[in-house]
Image (tube, rainbow over all chains, first blue to last red):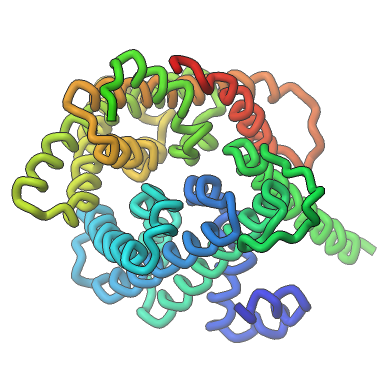
Length: 223
Length: 193
């Protein structure tokens, strides 16, 4: 996770010159699936009540995304055009079943916390969207990069939400208390409504930043 | 587990644990097609229809998979059933009402990837519902989905005329409303005991 730090400190412009990092960064920042494209929202809202759950969900999704993007890209000349969506869904469902059983084997507790939402990775529009829009048209290497970027972007977004919600709703981060015991927990943040509010807040920040940047560029261009 | 009455299941799925506002299932169409009340209503109808068929099929499939001892195929077979049902509904709507077909646009095939439907099927299996219970559960979930979609569409129609700051327009505003709706739906907790 050293890359997100880099993007923040302004290496962005120099890094974007190489096409490989460009594809990766596109998913992580410029076309972040959650904050910019606003797709695959269901798991984002549902399991982001603690930072740990959010991170686990993000990693599971990233794994499925990586595997499905790779396989779809390998098979892109084999799959007939007419039945491609069904094929993609089957590929995705297979990997999700694998991820589901793997998580259950690693930690029963985590499996319980995430519940049906692991199976629901199948219907995450993000994964099908990348298979259709990117992996079916590009080489294996670029598809892998794309999946890594999008997966990292998705995990990053989930973590952003989960951290805020856990911090405000429970006064802790990764289960470790941050605030003193006198901290009054903001219970709403742990409830479903908190998910909507936190996401709205993050999108608001993203919009505001984008707007400020646009205004600055326009200001530069005019005089 | 003590047997629940049908009424109980229905209220539970539609109001107390509303699929959109409490479980966050089906957020994509919720944000996407909730612009107009009429479209929202029809979308809700289509989703409910797919839900009932999917729930019925899933019940049968589950019995079959347990009989042959292959529960790991559960997810894959469910998604195939849902995809076929959606295809069916799509052809039906295209034939019966081309105008509606155009209005729903890309969101019609996307019902396949609507988590509400797969979620419903998975929950139903987890809860061990019988045949009739599954159908009632599907109807309740569909009604809840339609209700949430309609409420949202009504609010958004009103907000088209409201003056809001430029940055909050679009998704941010929709999410804020959804949050408030979700809060108010919490008032149903405890209904039916």
